[in-house]
Length: 139
Image 1 (cartoon, rainbow, N blue to C red):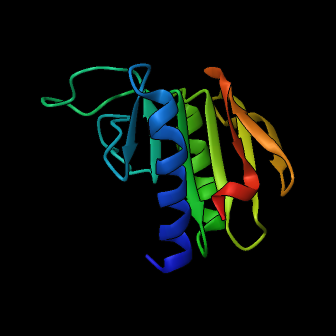
Image 2: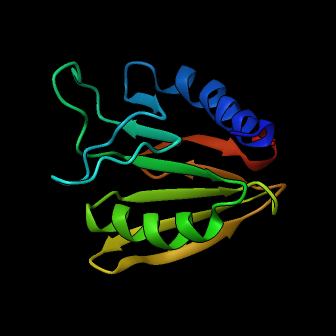
């Protein structure tokens, strides 16, 4: 990981963990059991509270990938994977463009709704409407 990638992951951690303590688990670069043969390690996964000492979580409220050079893979391949397993919200933080691609309404072929949120805007987490992230705070 290069410093821009690491910095965004660290900023997301600092922003999300304090506001979600006791409401959800914020997992950083840890497995998410999306199917019997796939356990991606998203940069950030907000998962339900639970004991994950015997098995990885198999669902998430939100998955976030940070893309410095992996935009195509994160937007297409991983987007389809997370949609197929029913992750209700998926963000791709595009470091070069300094924006977030927000994916919602998963279905069998991907996400029905995709929008971009840029500098000067904030983004609320669908599962926790009272929690929002200023895009500028990510970079």
